[in-house]
Length: 469
Image (cartoon, rainbow, N blue to C red):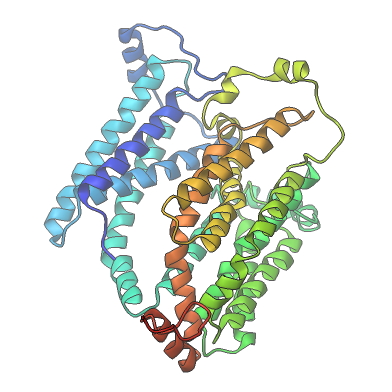
């Protein structure tokens, strides 16, 4: 596995910077709201920005500003500071830091020149810290993580490495927005609210039942790869060891969430997240010694049946199977131009809600790419078709939500759905090969059969190929 070239990494960094610029200048509670101001007045405001007292309710936003700049620092260091020599990496780190800080200051000045925007040294400092963390993260990645990943992949342990990275990301995701309690008073308030939080049956109190069910289902599915990881790294371990490790991880995450102000520890979460881990362990135990290519061949025949069932499921969990509908005139009266701005609905909610919505949408529509791949894995246009199909279904959902009382459409979701389905189609061949190898590790016979099939001696069902005439 090799890192992308500097040019590609620089391009990714520029694109990410443009995304930050878009969210900083265009997105807002009222959409793009430009108030004319002179350049000298904007400069004077820029010179007057100060630190402000940091109320607790602003801390998640400050932390989010820090987290958003971590990828930019990472990409800047990757583009400017790659190399084996420490001096070159150090010079690259200084260059990446200077470039990113100048970019932060330029964006803050632009926010004052295109008011009204809130610009404080608190946010500048938080974003600068994010850049430093991103640069440091790339140093650690290049020096420690990347070599280990290469060794794992070379040794055929790519699945374990992938599942480990996913589990690390999932733990961080569960603890977003990372606004940990800062003093005894805040911790006391969390402890007093703990009994009420623990007895909640599922997350999302006050939200529609369909959304809450989807959130719970997403939590279950999200922890399935954790169970797979425990099964892969503990091939020679007992089932009790794997389940105990999963339970310990879930309990630790729930205890840690007690110290996160915007998180809600749930006793029920231990149960349904543990259900996902058990499912992951069961899946990996089931595939041991099995011919997955043959299983995929049989499962692909059910895709034409699974697709419409899946579409009905998507419509159901979005609450569209109800009798109450708005008239077209009523719906048009409620529609606002700002709703068509990409990611506007993500801007007007908290950063943790926005990230949860984005992940949930991607996870909901990625199965389309998986099903298209299972049916036509060799289709050159499969990724495009999967993306178009996912975008069409998502657009149908959003139009339905537009015509439902009390719901608000998000016209960014079709683009997220399309990207998720296309990426799933592209990524499935590599991922499936990893699972195939894991399945054959416990069965020398199946490993021999897989080798014969790879050499063209057997067909996908394991039958001998007819000799060429």
